[in-house]
Length: 115
Length: 196
Image (cartoon, chains in turn brown, yellow):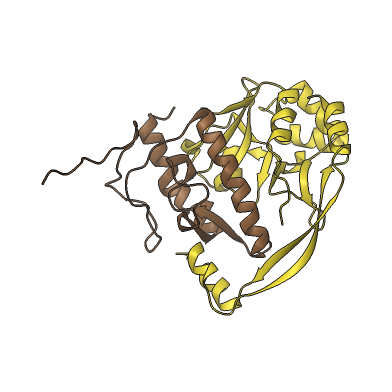
């Protein structure tokens, strides 16, 4: 029986080296894709609107917790799906040992050649 | 949109009081979220012991008071290599901080233009003062704030162009403005209206 090959958007890639990714933190599954330009800005705006609502509806002000997209919006993650979101202490999100400076930002620089 | 257009637009959208459902989460669940591995949102939403209440929340546009001349000079003295565009300097001398549909209680929006006292190297705003310089060059200054630290409006002081940059990978692929008028237009278009 023939199987249909999975199709992915142009520019998609899979992450096989998770060096630097914090232990115990959920990882995205499946391929990722770097968003740029208007596509990124539109996705970010949608995430902002969604996350502002989540913060307000769940009384997150003053908790020191950030809403983090498990597959970041910049890497093609859903800006609206609750299953792609988690709460993280700010330090684990963006602090020196956080998931962004330790993993996602270096990955983007590697993918784009630092451009 | 120039500054006067912004002031007119702000005056055209009066304060709104929104009755919204706010969920209170048990402290042990929030404590779990505060662990280094965090907590999935779906786990928060399905946690036992949460209860909802209705609250009236006031939202309005807040334009900051003019920056003191001393505050502008202090910033420039602290950042001698960063020359601010003339129109941006003029903006903060008139309106220091733009918070569209701010929560009236906190005075802040989900994301907005920060007062000059909060401007810093984008790398520092994103990742802290000890961040590796290789993450983002010194030429980029973050002039906005974001409640989740996820993205920033960043001025390239060398070109005068403003970019939207993401903490997951700041780059220059999303320019949003070449001057303050375009920046104000972008901020206005991206205001987040309050919802119940």
